[in-house]
Amino acid sequence: MEPLIRPAFARPSNLVDGAIRNTEPATGRPFPDLPITSPAEVREVVGRAREAQRRWAALDWGERRKKLLAFRDRLIARTDEVVDLLVRENGKARFEALTHEIFPIVDLTNFFAKRARRVLRDEKIPLHLFGPLKASRLRHEPRGVIGVISPWNFPFSIPMGDVIMALAARNAVVVKPSEWTPRILLLAKELLVEAGIDPDLVGVVPGGGETGAALVEADVDMVIFTGSVATGRKVGEACGRRLIPYVAELGGKDPAIVLPDANLDHAARQVVWGAFANSGQICASVERVLVHESIHDAFVAKVVELASAVRQGDPAAAGEAHVDVGAMVVPSQVDLVQRQLDDAKSKGARILVGGGVHGEGGARFIEPTVLVDVTSDMEIWRDETFGPCLPIRPYRDVEEAIREANDSAFGLSAYVFSRSVSRADAVARRLEAGTVMINDVLYTHALPETPWGGVKQSGIGRVHGIQGLKDLCEVRHVNRPRLPMVPLWMFPYRERTFRAFRYGMRKLFRGPLG
Ligand code: NAD
Picture: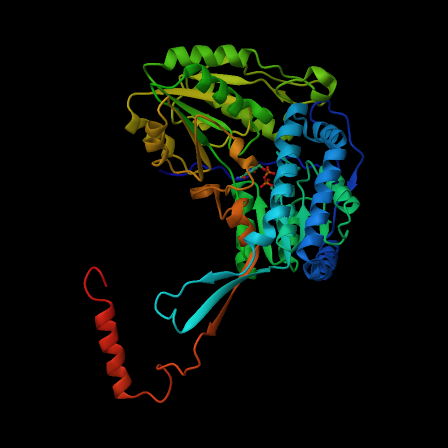
């Protein structure tokens, strides 16, 4: 299919007179200006990080583990403060600030602080031909300084996962937070320093695209980028020019397939949460639901009931009462979602719940919205929405559902619901996605041990997991002899040895068993 990914949406800038000027998404109250980091300052920060990395890598594993665990403890001790700032800067529900942002980082820090040494120790490679004569080992050496560029939807857990893993792999790291949510990382840095980590080892460089581009051009040794496809391409090109490794975690349009035998209460609850958590501003949000025609109406009725009960409002004002859904972080994202809703309505979609966009005094909210009579030519079905919208369509047979689910330029996550896990698994294996969850949604980004990333235009490479930790290292191969002998393949070349090689090759690689 022809990808319909739009170019980066034009955004009114919040970068004014050399400063970042933001308001609280849920109230419209202004934050004090924050200075933008200039390209020259970025280079200085990277230079200091390189020096600090040498000292960090020279510590023994026990020392590094102690400092990382001290960060875990500082984060636990100051959790309420981090929650409060996340709620103010990002507008998300207090519950999500704790469970989506802080808890996963406490767990990830604990996990990698305790396992990095074991995962990164030398590995033997058994040599299938030369084993009796030679031995090979892999060493995992830190890359140096890792550059991290992050988005605004999980302004703490996305960059901090990369930061902690980079440190666990003995690297330094410099982070360019999103210009919409820079303050939370300045607080994170404070916690790292309180934990005894060298302030130069973790640089935070607030700014916009220019600062991000300067970070890629500075002397970093690898870039982990999370954001849109359009920016991901630019960053990838710059990394290609510099010949440095690059991980891209990009957009998604994740489908959920509800099979005819699914537990409808369970599936409806999951899908409603998967679409509306974080106001739908999750790369792995449920953005398309395909429901078997035999259960479509019953499923939609349950979704409507649950979606109508979702409580939305200013998470800070709700206090201990909690709201479920908070605000939209970026003003232009509100416009984009509204445009997709208008396009859907003009092409015949019906809105069963929500559809309203509101906010007083500069606050920005989109109501959790459920749509039916959706067709595949609608923007809301094809393009990333990144807002609280849940379009639902019926399908006739499972082949149609799989075809529709895969008919996307993206491939981040996908979800399958069935009472039979083996039936769901047979569908899961055919879905083009970096992660497929059966009877669940969203949550695996919070698992430190599983890899995270997408296929197709959802990204390149993986973060998290053992693979993610190893990718933060350069692999060095050391080969040594087991027996003192001169190999037969050296000068002077002789006909006798040529024949011996040919004979040996023919003997070794004969027939299907060779
Ligand atoms: P974005 O691409 O606009 O910005 C991402 C970051 O890149 C920001 O920090 C921005 O300042 C920086 N940037 C902008 N131009 C740059 C340049 N030329 N060079 C270097 N850096 C530059 O994305 P966003 O709006 O912040 O985030 C939303 C997008 O992120 C959505 O598409 C969403 O799906 C995606 N996302 C993906 C994942 C994932 O894990 N796959 C997770 C979260 C968000």
